Length: 328
Image 1 (cartoon, rainbow, N blue to C red):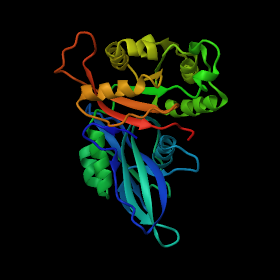
Image 2 (image 1 turned 180 degrees about the vertical axis):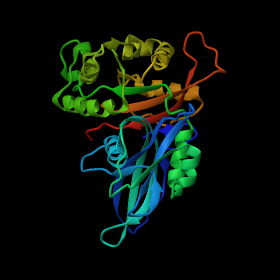
Image 3 (image 1 turned 60 degrees about the vertical axis):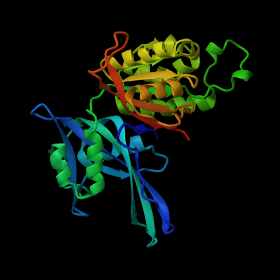
Image 4 (image 1 turned 90 degrees about the vertical axis):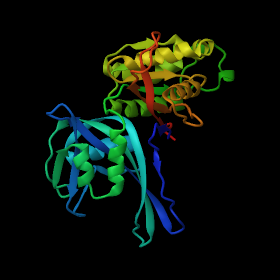
């Protein structure tokens, strides 16, 4: 994972020698517009523990955290949702079945509520929609309050770009044709399908791609599902970006400024430098910027009213989170 400005992704608790296992889970701050023009979030009551918490649950075998968050939100609240960004990761000890101690690791996302209706059940018998301020007083655990703090750090509908590195396309040296036309391999097609399943959870509305067959193929299924055209982005190809990195950065900002979440597929010679430049412009450092094939950076932006740049929208990066290759 990457990091968010002023909000660390990891809230680490060292496991210690008695920890028997790691239990992976995922949840969300589920939100919707409030009647007064603000927002309200969902907090659930679990009769088994007699506590108030944010909706969350364990990952099924082979399940990604993003999929688990969406599934658990619907199971516990009755509402479908669309993810926007990864908020934080919380670690805490829990009892293990063998009587020892396990470490629970929970990834929390921001998630906008869609259609649905809450129905009390054995797991959750009450749901309250409330302001984040009231929710922080209501939740039973300090880590839930800190998750809500991470949610409050950035508007939940901040401009967002999902920056994707294309799926596997074999080695350049093994391809005898024009490298622009190098296609996905069988492992790359599996990555593409897994990416399609992941990206759609974030409710993208627009699809852009460096003009490479492997990049186009990576996002074509998503574009087809949306009924959208894959917009070519030559400034975000390796040769276009290397020739003028600032032009590529400005193009990414213009994409971010357009309505709706966008997916942009690019290459390994672009993404690390581009994300690092965006972070530097935003006033923070991410350290090493990873970019494995099939990985995704979720980039959330804040409007910067103090910046005057006629060549680009007045946006600055506010949060950047790394989602690794979904088939690893």
